[in-house]
Image 1 (cartoon, each protein chain N blue to C red):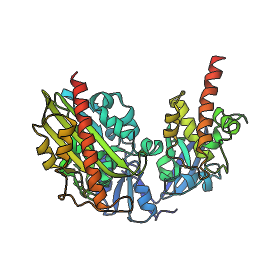
Image 2: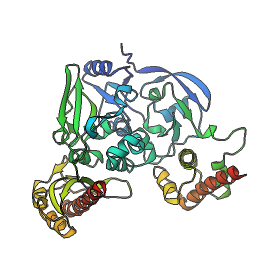
Image 3: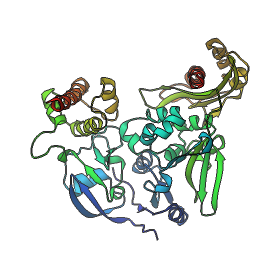
Image 4: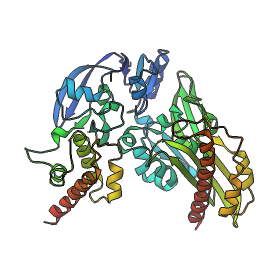
Length: 291
Length: 165
């Protein structure tokens, strides 16, 4: 398949990339290209200029910060997340999730920044980053600004990144003491397109849930923190039965779209299932990290 | 200053040999390999990144060459199926595919061999599940996966046997 005619530039720095992006309305960053190249083949979008940012060393760093936080450059690939010792020790669940994105070829090229900026509601990383309370660092020619992951994802293929801006990095704070993270997906096939997905971070003390963040994906245009389920979990015993009961709060408030892979109703049912599994995994992981 | 253009002069090293060409910026790497350079070993199955028949290794990364633009490969070291066997000898992976009947129509084979070659470099002793995960991005339209998995396992075993010698 042939792409429409397009210009290509490979700047040597983020500053140059931002200049190039600002030079034309039809300019867009090209990172791993594992979605964008297909979008261009299908001529869903028409662009004048592709600004290849995939090799910019500034965007390819994984840096441990003081206090256990991580700063991950936008062009770090899934494969690098999966195998980075820094990521595996600070955020093992992120490494595991990245290692189950589609296939090896896609993991070798697809990037954390691309996964976020595409903002496909079925993408793997957005709900996890919202649950982990990541901060998204956005840069333009006028400087940098930081946006909580929770506000970054606006909906279908829309994010906080505006014209002339670039997602530079994702900063992930450490989990609190005694807290653990969990993640669960019901998908079409192994490591395939998701039908329902949930990520959770849960803090447990003396057998009771102190605080929980539960984020659902594939059931709304953007990752959704489910306040009702979080409220039901707070103070509840950290048991399977209590968690199952809390998932009953997921209900009519969700109106997922149906598609060829599952009706809206089915997705809502599966949201309860993945929410339960993610929270139970988070409880288990928190326990093991404490021990 | 950023040099942006609809054509790009690129230089790539493929299977150890250097090629310099001027290409359209929109050209896919797979078309560069097959049409510009005439290296037809890399196949196009779906053209949408779904089937893995066009898999090559770019700077050590397993890559579907239909999901990358040729200018993105500028300066890269690329390995294709043409470079897998040295001096006319089948590589261990190729020999194992022949021995274990790891191909039927053969269309997916170049991509399968590249994916298997990549796997065994990283993980010389994969489990069956690791082998299956490693070819998750490669579709065999004959559905001959059992023998493909067997072939990769045999190639791994073969490497082990040779080390033991």
